[in-house]
Length: 272
View 1: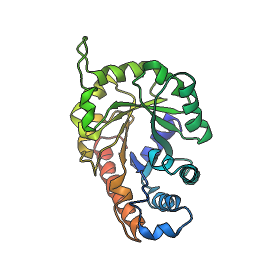
View 2: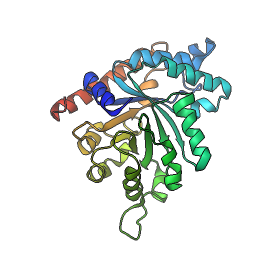
View 3: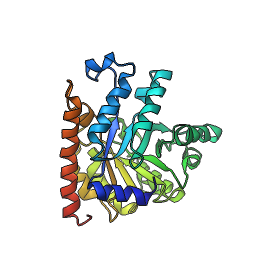
View 4: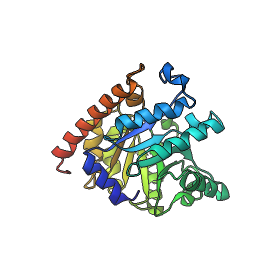
């Protein structure tokens, strides 16, 4: 999905919601365990319940690959089930050099046909450039919300910049606003406004709203640009909104609530 199509979907649905499919066998409703593929059955019902409100789905690959071949099969079935006009993001956080990066790119872009892949840029251009294609999205880890992020990302360099600032600005030179996004954690909302000044046109993928405590209104105020420029992810807050047989209904209610808030934000901002 290209940038123009993504923006069109956002404006059509009045939503910049990404639903994270962090599907855990230990957390899904117990009645689904009767199915041959409970992971896919859960995802299928979540997708049916939320597809009118979501513009992207983001399976966290760890939840699938830990199940071995069966997990990869569930992932493929999930991808096949997601409507074609919704962005698909492999949250795999891959990052290596040489042929390894090339094969990682082929795995998620070609074998599994994801639209986008999260990238760990620690090894520099060698770990980013192989993932850049004009018809795909490389989503580079920029400023994350985890406690350990402070260990490296916020260290000051000799030129006065913080590490995450340097990483994001440099990566933006390798990609462009049509094939690169950046992960910026919602609980770092105070930093998003400054990052938006430094990187005005790229999309930011923002996890951490809801269960992790991030504020949607704060993120939007700091991060929206003239093309919206945000995908806000919610995982647990939607997919585990209910734990009984009505889990899909509860997921729909949670997704609709977030979409309604997004619609108000977009209207007030004059973006729709």
